[in-house]
Length: 230
Image (cartoon, rainbow, N blue to C red; front, side, top):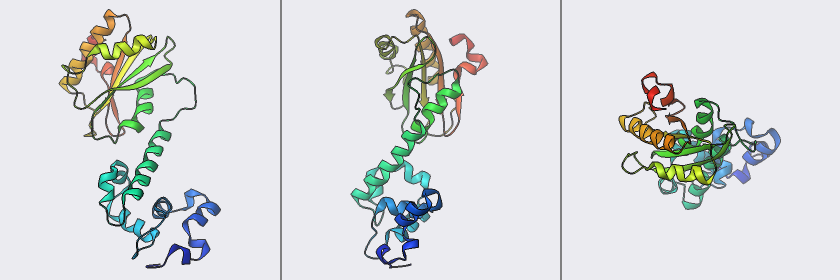
């Protein structure tokens, strides 16, 4: 298959035709990537180029890459880099998609299920507020702060302002640890305590603070030593 253009392949070996005939599950990662790339280079067709890329960069690494870094890979220019980033982002959004009008958030695991697809591969900390109605249905989730959490920079009023605008009955906050380890830091605890106190004054309770690592999480509320916070 080396140096053979996809147009010259037998019909049963062409990725697009195989996709149409057998569905996407029948295709290898390199065949799926070849469809995304569309074309290869002068020396390699799209399938061979995809095999080479995937032998050097696994799917997780590719999913975390931005356009600038992908464009530096031999055989991938700006347009192909944009296509790859867009495909992975659609996958993340689908993973967090819920067809219900309002999703019920009844426990820390529900928060994890909603946010993990969005947060687990980010390279910066994202602090997110989830605003619930009286039946614990999710009204809105919004990123409040991006960067290393700092109690002097992250003000409770920013979160409470949104809660009041959305007529929220309760708040849950969450953030990711890019290291993959969800163990709460001292600063995480400090921020949780400050926010909880502010929420009590406004009679909009803070129900929990979830720290998300890579495919795992920690609920600060569920830590026995932290019961006094809430």
